[in-house]
Image 1 (cartoon, protein in one colour):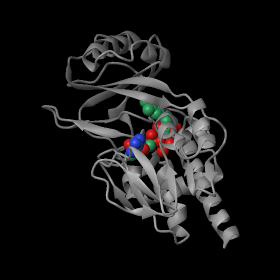
Image 2 (tube, helix red, strand yellow; image 1 turned 180 degrees about the vertical axis):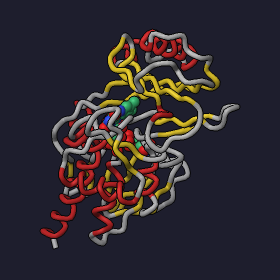
Image 3 (cartoon, rainbow, N blue to C red; image 1 turned 90 degrees about the horizontal axis):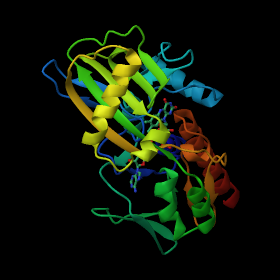
Length: 307
Ligand SMILES: Cc1cc2nc3c(=O)[nH]c(=O)nc-3n(C[C@H](O)[C@H](O)[C@H](O)COP(=O)(O)OP(=O)(O)OC[C@H]3O[C@@H](n4cnc5c(N)ncnc54)[C@H](O)[C@@H]3O)c2cc1C
């Protein structure tokens, strides 16, 4: 979200922007996926569950998404909650379609060559760029920044994220529970009936997210070892015997929820390198969007001053 938000503003200002993402498709921590079942594909948003809209600029952007039909309110979660439709990552698909994005490209580092930036990594095209932006979680940005700007790297090194073990479970019958969400119950920080979100179809599906404390304590267990804990916790929280799962998957987010440094964005004008992302503001989708915006505005302002 932060990278695409930054790219939107730069491109609208006439900059030529190229994005590289190690993921296979748009999403990042607004990821969605499907699991095949005998009852058809079950869909899951397994990162961000919904997003809030408090910043006026973000509100205007989300209105455009709503008009285009790929974001809607989800009042069952909370009064000001929004989701992408038919999946959370639909929003990113639409944003990414406006730009040149190279997926499945893991950036392992940056090289400064003749005053320009070259991205390092397996299969990376040999291209040189006037400026480089890292729109990554702090822990992933820090090692890349360290070699080039220690001040930026230090900010990233101080921003620690919390992990989140996330379970995705599809059932052949509805879980007989009156609500669509569970909050703060035992090891569960949040669980939601994904199939009840607006615009979803397919079999009954639930996403179960463990608390940061439990996730940290069990971080190095295997997904197979985690799944029964999350399923058991869902049964306990809903107070009902669960129908047998027809498909499941478990995902470990090592850097799920950022601490939020409040810096907004980082930019080194001399080196033409910067960083944006939720960790520079707070652990929310809209913070990532705002951070990307702020960095682009700063880059454009600095370029105008230098001209
Ligand atoms: C389990 C979970 C639940 C959440 N719930 C909510 C919620 O309910 N509401 C809310 O507002 N927010 C929630 N969040 C937080 C929200 O998802 C994030 O704040 C937001 O998506 C961060 O966006 P970003 O662009 O800063 O980072 P990311 O989405 O992490 O994007 C970073 C991108 O960089 C790519 N990348 C990383 N390293 C490299 C590399 N070396 N080379 C190339 N590409 C790389 C990744 O593939 C990714 O696409 C949740 C997050 C998680 C994980």
